[in-house]
Length: 124
Image (cartoon, rainbow, N blue to C red; front, side, top):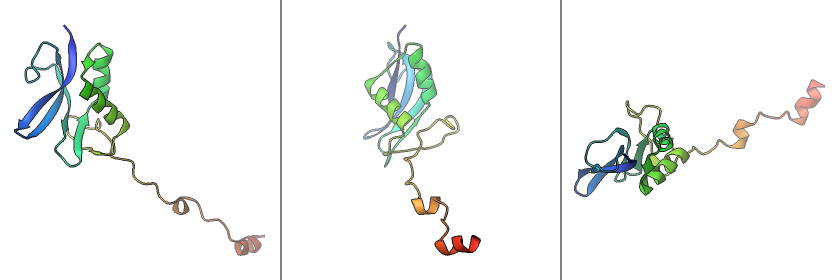
């Protein structure tokens, strides 16, 4: 029995969202699945992706074949795509795409203040 990781479409007409599911290849995407490892909502602004990358890696290691789109989403989840918003869900707590890295603080604020020549002569 071949196992695949693919998107299962849900939602209304012209307002889709997708579950990332692991299921037998012979099953219809809307049919039964072995495990739901996340979801993807492309209509949100920015798009929302919640994915358990550890489970995706596990299923790939035991022979599951990810679809082309799921493979891209896993890469985005691992690299933290800047266009995706992260949401915490109880079921997927701690296994979500991190938000885009924040801009670093200015170097002046991070570096300790250096002594001025007047302070050096006073301490000598």
